[in-house]
Length: 235
Length: 294
Figure: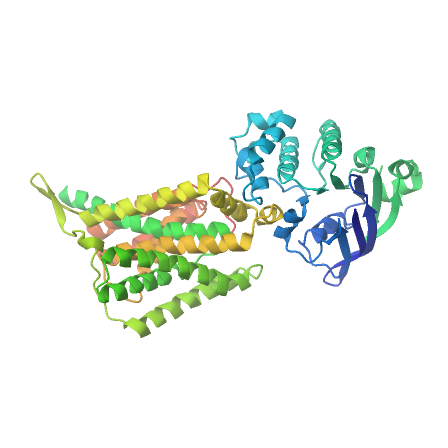
C-alpha cells in the first residue's frame, strides 16, 4: 500500500501542496485529477525527490519514500515517467529501453524484458535502431512506459501519458496501461488532466485543487457528479 | 609546393593536438554546459607531473602514463571540489570559477617548478627529425605520426566507450536528460565526475604531445586552449566527432596562416575562425540541428 499523509510542498512562499493525504491499495490504479496548477505533477515529483518536501510522509510497502535521493527510488521499486519529456531523443529506441535496465547491475533478464516490450509495442520494434526523436507522440509514450517496465517497478507513477495524443491513441494507451498494471500487479498513480480517460480505467480517484485534496473516492461516483465534473474536471 | 606539404603535415599533427583539447572541452560542455577554461592549465600541471618523474630518471613511458592518470585524478577532483557546488547556480559562476582555477593552477605550477621554459623529450625517445621520402625531406617526424596515432586511439576508445558500454550510455543519458537518468537510477553525480576525469585525460594527452614541440612552461597550454576552443566551436561544441574534424581543420588553417602570413598571424587567424563560425554557422559543423543555447 502507498500511504501519503500530510504531504506539503512550497515553491518559495507559494504552497504547491498542502496536507495532501490519501491511500492507494497495492495493485490498484489511482487517478490523480485536477486542473492545470492543481499540484498533480508536484505530487509525483515530491514522491521521487525531485522537489523538496516541507513536511509529510509517503510510505510505500512499509518504506518511507521521502528523503531518498531520486536515483535511489528505482531501487525501492518506484518508476516515475515524467510529463512529456521522458524520452531521451538523442538516444535510439533500443538505448532508451536499455536505460531502464541499467540500475540492476547484473540483470540477466534485461534482454528478455526489452524483447517483451517490443512484443507489446511492435511499432517500437520496427524502429529500435532509430533515434527516439523520430517517434510520434504515441510511440514516445509507449517507449517511456516500456522503459519503466524494463526497470521492473512495483509502483508506477505516470504523469499525463495522454498529453498531446489523439483521443483514439489515448484510449488505446489507457487500455494497455490497465492490462499491464493488472498483469504485473503494479500499483499505479495516474496523473491526468484528461479526467475522462483516466477515470475509465481507475479503481480510485483523487481530485486536487490548488494543492489540496478536495475529493476522493470511487471513479464512477465522481464521474456521475455533475457539479464536481464542471468545477474541477472540466468535462 | 614543399612548403605547402610541410605546412599540411605540420597542420595535421598540431590539429590532432587541438582535437584532443577540443574533445576535453566538448565532453564537459555537453555533460554540464560549462566551458572549462582551466582545461589547459590542468593539462600543463599533468605535464609537470611527467616532467618531475623524468627528472627522477623514471621510464619515459611510465611518465607518459602517469600524466594521463594524473589527468583523470585532477579532472575528478576539479569536478567534486570546485564544480559540484555550482550546479543550478547562475551560468556565469562556473565561468568565473574555471578562469580562477586557470590562474590558480598556472601560478601554483610556476611556484613549484619555476616559470622558465624547459624541454621535454618525446616518450621512448621517438625521433623528432623529419623523414626523407625518396629525395624529398619532409617536415614530418616519427613523433608526428605518434601524435596523430595516439589522438586517433583516444578518439576510437572514447567512441567505443560512448557507443557500446553501459557507462557510455549512462554518460550520454546524464548529459542529454539528467532528470530522466536519475529517475532510472543513474547516479548522475558520479557520472559527471567520470566525465570530467575523461575530459581532463584528453587534455593531459594534448599536454604531453605538445610539450616536446614547444617548451614546458606554466602557460604552455594557453594558446592550445584558444585553438582547441576554436576547433570545438568549429566542430559544434556538442560533438566528439566534430572535435576531431574541427581540430584537424583548424590545425591546417592555422598552419597555412602561420606559414604564408607569418606566425604572428596564427592567433588572429584562430580568432577570425571563431568569429566566422559563430556568425555563419553558430551550431558548428557537426552539432545536432537545434541551435546552441548561449
